[in-house]
Every structure is written in C-alpha cells, then in structure tokens.
Image 1 (cartoon, rainbow, N blue to C red):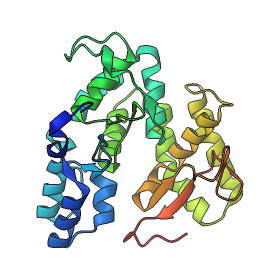
Image 2: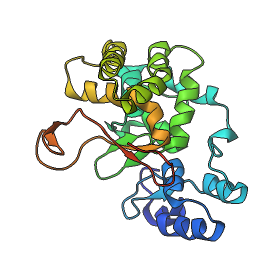
Image 3: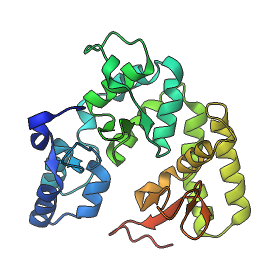
Image 4: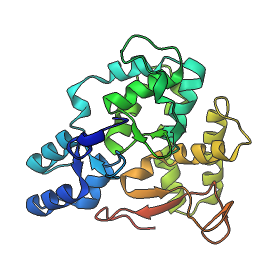
Length: 255
C-alpha cells in the first residue's frame, strides 16, 4: 500500500473501470467516488476499493461493504494507542487534513509499535488510511472509511469529538437557514472542543475544527478546503480556514 511497484494497477479498480461499471449497472459515478475512491499511487491517482464497488453494483446501493468484513473494535485498538499525539493526527484527518508519515520505521508486524508513524503505517497497510507517495502524507480516503472511524470513536474515549460530530447536523441546518448567530456559536463550540488537542490559534487547527463541525455535510456536499488562488487566500480573498460546500451531483442539495 506504500510501494506497489508493478502491482499498482491490480491493487484496486482504476477510475476508468469504475466509470464503465457505473454506466453498465446504472449507478451514479460521483457517488461511487465519494464512497470508495481516495487511494493514490504513483501512476494511478484514483484507486477504488474493489470489494465495495462490486457489492454496490450488485446490490444497487452505496453503503459500507468492505468495512463490514471486520468489527470496528479492531480499529479502535490501534486508534487508542496515543503514541506521540496519534489521536491528534487522527482528528486532523477526520477534519479533512493530511498528515505526514514516516513509513520506513514500521517493523512489518501488528504487535511492535514504537511511534505513531508505526501505527499510521499499519492503518495504511490495512486500508483504513490512504497514502500519497509523492507528498508522504496519509489521509482518510472516502466516506466509507470515515464512517468506520466514527463508529470506532463512538464506543468510548472520544466524547469531545463525538459531541462535535453529533452537532454537525444542526450546524448545517443553521448554515442553510442563514442563522449567523447559531453558526458562530456552533463553530466556536467545535473549536473549543478540539482546542485541547490541537493548537487553538493555529490556522490548521481552525480549519480542522470547521471540517469536523460540518462533518455531516459530506453526505450531500463536497468540502473544498482551499482553492489555489495565491498564498494565504482562497477564492475572492477568503481566509484559508474557510470551507466551501459544493453540492454533490445527484444529491438534490442546494446552497
């Protein structure tokens, strides 16, 4: 999962194959990408989970298929190993960020963990995290995997994060209703909850907090963290901590 060499094209379904399958089975390609895309290799930058794609096509419904092959308690065991701020990095990734990982220290087993990089590398090998070989950064690849992390967090030890995630539905509703007062209160609450883990005044911390606060919006919207329009700015002079919500095709959502 970190160096495929000649096996890269066989690790998962490339984008062209998934597009053909969606046309054949009458499924929405954009939703397939939201659910199962996200793995990135050297040549193929869009690799889909083959197990999940096959199940979705046959059942005519997008859902969690690959992650249902094992209980989320197994993932929670590794998440609770808080080596060198592992929990902080996982929260950043759940908020849409990418975290740099040194995969070379991994001991090639599921028992020897000396640093957070060892745990993150194992999660990459297991498919719970995607890995960009060019930037050497790990991230949560798609909606299916994000749901599994949420399930693992829900069974204890992550109460402050779960509080933010559960409040995200109301925050999205307040945003769409243009209730600026409740939006400010919701974002402030989310920022305060994660500030004990992340640096409060750091811009990435604020961006992570906003990403977590609008977690539920990912069902109908694509979250765009920053647009490439110059250093320190995105869009028309909007601070980089802002997040744009763009309606996903076929969702019926409007802004």
